Length: 363
Image (cartoon, rainbow, N blue to C red; front, side, top):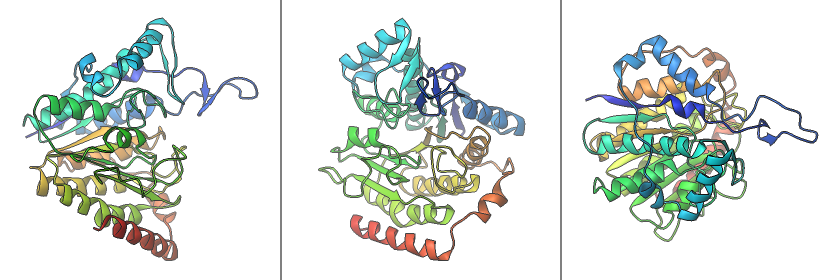
């Protein structure tokens, strides 16, 4: 069975207004190139997949926007109405670092709809695996407080829609975006049937969330905060020593990855040292878990990643692995990133840190 690739050009037309990196233009902040959450990294990923031929092997699909009834399972009507009114006018900003232009509501609903359709198709058996190129992203969005470029909680909306349709009961969300998945955590914090796991750079964004001690009343939330400077080996250790045992204990019917690429080296908003090979290897581990636990059902939903030149290589590696293809886009930075990996002393230190986290979760 095929791997689906869910994408719509309209999502690349989302914009955030006058920013220079994450600072609003004005005062002593002169105009710049705009928000780092731009369409270019996603558009270049699509272009790279077309040039290498990877796109030809995928089941290409779009999807309708998420319906209001879908959104209301996560977001209160007061928030949706305020968002829609601003969107119909000329755009604006409701939360923290979550601006949008006119028509932003419809594009955000489409982004959530792509995630919803990808998860729906896999759970219905139409596809074995799927990738949703959702934009704007969603994992920071709280029910009534968008932030961190996220306007709707894409994965949460999709999970609740799948539940409402009776397609599955137990879910797992593994978030390897460099920033803590605070929105997904908050929405499912006390839900015993949704395991949420976030591997992230400690105290990056948000500054005050993502601690290992936050478990929720059901104990189904797990945070794996890592110090800046962690690289390939540390992330694979985190997967092997903490994430995979947690998945085995939870036994989900589907695994969903909040797939950010901002833990890659050279990302402007992260200080980690992953390579394209890191994302391929983490995807492979998720495939192994899905094969063992949930009949191969695995969906990757695009989140962050702000290096326009490098995100396409990371995404290509992950998607080729997801689809089981040997079509490669050779990583132009592989040698440089390999040379920058932490040494043995640092790896031993972080290994001890991961051992403490594994003990905390009793895995």
